[in-house]
Image 1 (cartoon, rainbow, N blue to C red):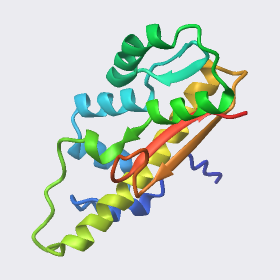
Image 2 (image 1 turned 180 degrees about the vertical axis):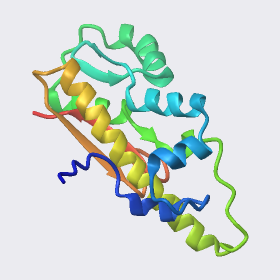
Image 3 (image 1 turned 180 degrees about the horizontal axis):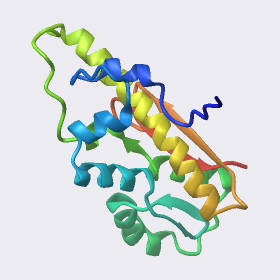
Length: 171
């Protein structure tokens, strides 16, 4: 039998707060996740991207607002490649922990705050790598002539704290 593994290591289910013995993401999701939650997650993995003035940006409220406020100020100014990379690095930043408003209830058996924090960080880093995988595919599909670099940090980026992901155009 040939098995084609394309997803996550099923051992990360051991990090989840809701125990599930089968180590099967499909069964876990169908038991603990609503259809709305599943579709919202798919939407996060497949966002819109856009190009404006040579910048490739993740379409979100921050990038739209920044472009609206600053486009007229910067219009006509020559931009170097490094400046564009720096701006894309900043504007495409996704601070993962800060965007989630709902967190799992930890079981009483896991009272150690440090252990909880480490598990949360580990899960968010795994999530960030999955976002990179899907965003990279989408960016390559939308902009096949461009190359992109991603950065994931568990210690923050650009003044943001916690697990962050960003991307920019490579040379």
